[in-house]
Amino acid sequence: MNGLDGRASGSASGYNYSDANKKSGLTWSEATFLEYIKDPRAKIQGTKMIFPGIKSETEAKALWAYLKQFRPDGKKK
Ligand code: HEM
Image (spheres, rainbow, N blue to C red):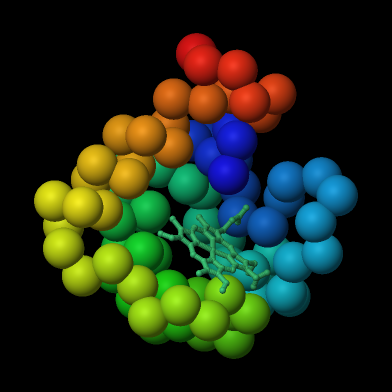
């Protein structure tokens, strides 16, 4: 998840993503993340992330606020 803010989906080096994730055309931002995380398999059909999602928008926003702090190297911005 490091460096997620502004990254194209399925593009972190060294991880073998599904084609669905690589081809979703999404760039991660608060807006795309909030849509995705409430129901990942609806937003990216065919993803191998089998997770029902976070239904609380308050929790999802707190999660994004946490995740966006980190650069690709894992250090805080
Ligand atoms: C709150 C919890 C979670 C968050 C915030 C989260 C977030 C994300 C995000 C943003 C991506 C896309 C990454 C990218 O495009 O670079 C992703 C992918 C993925 N996640 Fe999650 N995830 C969560 C829980 C889980 C759980 C519980 C699992 C497994 C049991 C999981 C397995 C995966 C897998 C396998 C992928 C790659 C999907 C693919 O290539 O189709 N995630 N996750």
